[in-house]
Length: 348
Image (tube, rainbow, N blue to C red):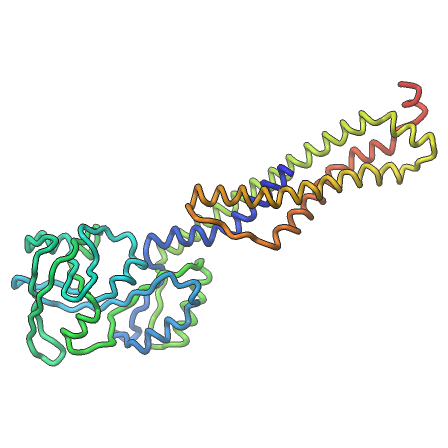
């Protein structure tokens, strides 16, 4: 039962670790970038085609970006248009003083920009530039938050994508898009090929630092689980074999008496082996229930998420438990069949 609990729990964790770790790694940002294959803007139609190739259950988030140069206090800055609700899924690591823009007329300033123009949360700023038709424009925004990332984003100003389209008088074009997808490196490679085949104007690129790190950590964790499981099974076989040998030694007189009354070696073997296999099956059933409880506790404490039950694991656990017990009983059962009733009944 103890071994089955560990086996069931660890194997459940083994199969659920990629899903759990995938969610954890998503906090490090996007793992697939969609850029233009022909040095031009990405159209909304092309982006929709690319997104349709990504399984909905695997897509954590997708954010499209559009950048234009505008002036603030006569200084040129890069202004990015994006969906603020979407970027929180693909870039959850962004640090913020204040809050994300919730309504039109609000902007997010990078920390470097805020220091340059001496702006703070709640201040009003005026952005000016030239639209796609060559006409100048000026728009006022309220600073809703100051962005702190330690990266190039601190040198930018961010506004809602809809407002960017209105200011530039053109829409449905993007510079690039980033996707956060719950998938391993091999699945991402296949997904990138599907997107490239479905939409030739888009070039999918894996963020290899994220995908390689994720794959490396998962492989090490899964290898550790298998090693621990194997060690537990070997120790279980030793313990079961030792226990059964003690049982055979205690019941030597009973075995000798049965043989003296006509019991064959085959019946003796069946009795002890049947007892061992029955206890193995019973331990396996108990281990399935306790193993899921064990895996659930580990998942909640380590990943702070509940784990999903693997139905196929139940019969496998019981089968492995029975086989392990059966193998461990072979030597003790063989010793039981070699008991000499004459010697035993004499008390020797």
